[in-house]
Image (tube, rainbow, N blue to C red):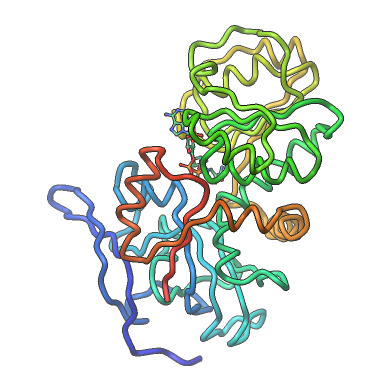
Amino acid sequence: MTEHAHSFRALLVTRDEATKVQSCALTHLTDADLMDGDVTVQVEWSTVNYKDGLAVTGKSPVVRKFPLVPGIDFAGTVIASTNPAFSVGDSVLLNGWGVGEVHSGGFAGHARVKGDWLLKRPDGLDARSAMAIGTAGYTAMLAVMAIEAAGVTPGSGPVVVTGAAGGVGSTAISLLAKLGYTVAAVTGRPEEADYLKGLGASEIIDRAELAGPAKPLAKERWAGGIDSVGSTTLANVLSQTRYGGAVAACGLAGGMDLPTSVAPFILRGVSLLGIDSVNAPTARRTEAYRRLMTDLDHGKLAAMTREIDLADVPAAAVDILAGKVRGRTVVKVS
Ligand code: NDP
């Protein structure tokens, strides 16, 4: 195993132990500053997910070990390994597993992690595209797989996607449209209607329509749903879901609460499917990436992706929490 003594750029989250206030700054680290692991990766690209926004700004206690390099996902090349499954030169990616939360992550030139957390990148998936998908896109794929497994097919009826112009939402729309589903996009940004239609949405719904308190049961509209908003939005989606439909809950951009009733479940047989990307088993991740290689329109993925430098991440973190980011943001790390 070769240790690299030279320094690399990194974002570092530190905490003042007296005031418990955390801050994040661009600095230089060496491999000696990294945490334990059996594989070291030269990080080429990372990305800004909603959770990275929370971690970098400190708005929620996502970072639980200090000092720590944030960044819940990355893609790059193995530069040192004592793990028999990985060799120097392997092209890899990582999503989740507590990286960027309790283990230093993707916003640095190098990352040292457990090899068990890494996936070899599928043939044809370069590091930048892997991060254009990122945890948001991989989560969207898990959500599509979940509603499919619950029996929702393109013939069942329309599928609603909330938080539509965000990362999970944009990728979910693109995936569902390519698979032949009719997709309704719920957004607070009507100015993004053309963008959402370009991804494959056939109907645009103002998020205000789903923002108020939900009735126990409302008019049946959706065969399925993919929700990244939570709170009253998810409650309204559930009460509008048709008999036997299924809704995947991915996120909490609108709130952690869920003010619903049991009516959709016991009177319409609706299923609420929980989606967790962080600790999903490796076989499920591998299947998700296999599907992303065939079922995601990579031209649309490129069109929904913008590129920033590592130094721009703190500003992008503020923007994503303000709901101002459209689609996906990739970060050029080294
Ligand atoms: P983004 O910020 O890119 O997208 C979230 C979208 O939600 C926004 O673009 C906006 O869409 C909508 N939104 C934001 N604030 C509100 C609000 N107050 N009320 C209603 N809608 C709102 O984030 P991501 O796509 O990266 O992540 C989405 C959610 O999914 C987050 O909560 C994230 O933590 C979660 N997540 C969960 C994962 C898991 O493993 N379960 C993995 C990845 C993400 P618009 O402008 O179109 O209305």
